[in-house]
Amino acid sequence: MGLLSRLTGMASTKKATDDVLLAHAMLLMAGADGNIDDSEIAVVRGFAMTLPEFKGKDFGEVVANAQKMVRKYNSLKESVNALTELSTPGLKAKAYVLAADIALASGDVDEAEDELLTTMQRLLGIDDQTAQTIIWVLQRKYEK
Image (cartoon, rainbow, N blue to C red; front, top):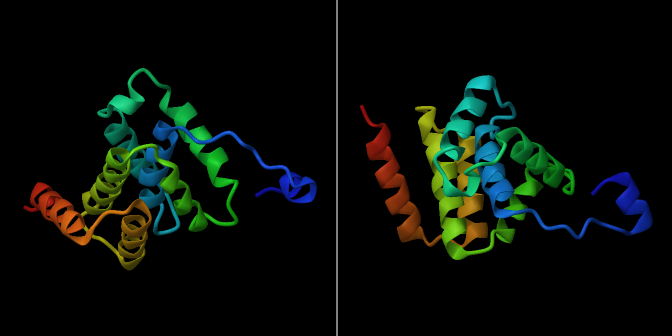
């Protein structure tokens, strides 16, 4: 929440769209270590361009809207709560899959990514069996 909305008691009533929330999930995971470099942005962009939610959309504009959404929260870590606004259980599962895929794509999952993925699992309502299956499949994708 920004200074103006805190002082006036007014907050934006505009909800983030599903495409923005999916981009946010991927960017959160890409930046879990506190930094998002160009190669991570390229990975996120590549993932996004394969999804129907991003068809015909300007990825830069989607990212800009995700950044605006983040500003409603006191910290980037708190902004993970925005993912609960995804409109369907299927999109919540998709956000979890995408975040896990981003984490595993680097070849090494660190503690911050692990914690973030656990938080996402809880907030998105992904049961343990489903989460384990997703991780197992993605491990097969990236194993050498």
